[in-house]
Image (tube, rainbow, N blue to C red; front, side, top):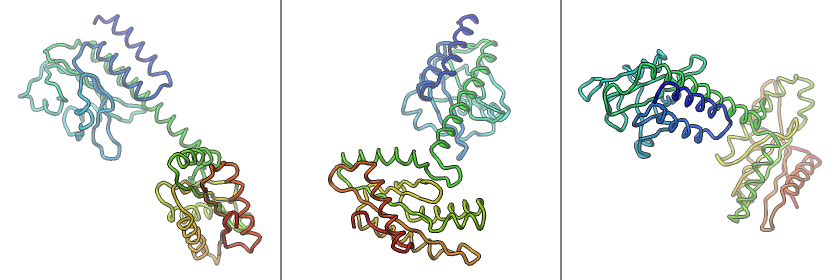
Length: 331
């Protein structure tokens, strides 16, 4: 493909990457356009896992699904490491199986020409772009520059994707307690109720109010109050399962949803939570207790607003009964 056509394709790719579409769709469009742009046999977006520091294929064209899913490779110390860490593109127009770098560079197909460019953003290495061809001298000197630009474009797109993901995550979380906001918690519970009706299993709600929390904040300050709240959240979380949901309602209330949990298990969990909190050493002679309410869905199709109202009434009943206890809705 002549340079003018390549530049036009580059502009199209940049336009695609600027649109807010699903990441996998973006990657698919990019790799297909990139393969056409350089008339190569395969193209791959290879990312570096920040936790394991292993390379994996995020998206590709001209590479089988099986190879893509099974591909795991260390970053090594040779050409690939240089591309990622030094953030320098490399073009090789003649390489064979006898080269010491061949196995590091080869993916699934045999090749004699390959080109690599770093994927980076804000000077952080994230992976590299890869393209290859079975013939010698396939790539032009200008391809190295264009491929490098594409690496920067992909890096910016990945950075944008991560920022969007972080923003969405923060919007669902209470920034001080690191649990779901009440509005997002309600959305998740509504979804759980739909699943429960379809699969015919119970769902329980628990609502806990921290007794005399406002007084504690007035005496010890807002910062100490939030630290106390987070500590109680940690105590409660230790009594929950991986599928349970936990959220914050207002200043001093913690609400929990336990999918597929019957009355006995919910009752035992609430009892353990009250006991653990009341016995916990908060320091300075401080004793903290909770008042709680619990409600379990029954066979009639539960309405979200009714369940939240019922669990609140049960919690208020526990407060009126002397606090440091919980009541069951309907009893």
